[in-house]
Length: 282
Ligand code: PAF
Image (tube, rainbow, N blue to C red; front, side, top):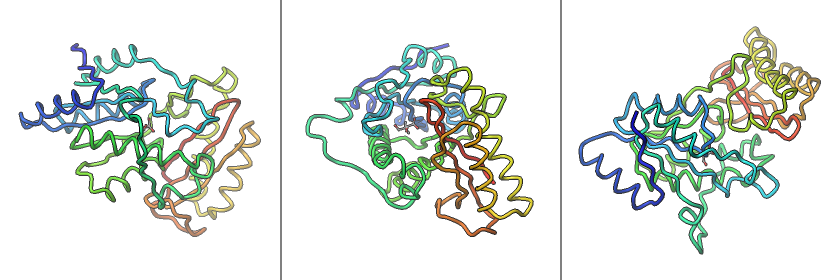
């Protein structure tokens, strides 16, 4: 088991990537905010299947958190993350400081309409996707990978990143990796550590409800009725619901009540101090 190269500056990252590229190796980047779990590991493994070199970035990006959100409390487990990455054969970790990513005078933002303004996450976190698109664009320009992989759990984020990469002509393939779930259906997330034991026991209700709603839609029930039943079940279970919606999977545009092709159901709900998001294919 070899430890990955840990790099903190853009210059060092570019030199490492250039050396691999000179040998004709394909390079993948897996952007993360650390607190790595099996979902992240699956992204590294997927990257490894199509690229000789896999870099993982670990950067808790302040610009994607609103002032009232959990930037300060976000779990930071760098040593354990690097050990996990060593065990799955990642070649490098890029861990820049906030000053490296946002130097004095920084004033450029990548902001999108389209999927970033679908009325889902953006309704509750209005500045979030500009922060994500800016930092991911920077990481892609800094590392210049052939492939970048993101978890499908953040479905709207993935749509935003695909759109930004296409619009900015970034020469990189953007791929999504399937959501990895606990045995009871809860989507793995670095934020699951915030859940109390009682909240953790309730949390799988989100996935259970979406699965039941998707089955009813596939059996012919109208989307609006299935969503209304799903919302009521989630609220009755003790969550404060932000949204439960079924949308076009690629554009995230609203769909007709009887639409049946390429649908994605997305949910966000709060329990205690934890906000959980999830999504499934319909
Ligand atoms: O999904 C995440 O962990 C973050 O939003 C990302 C893509 C690494 C950008 O900071």
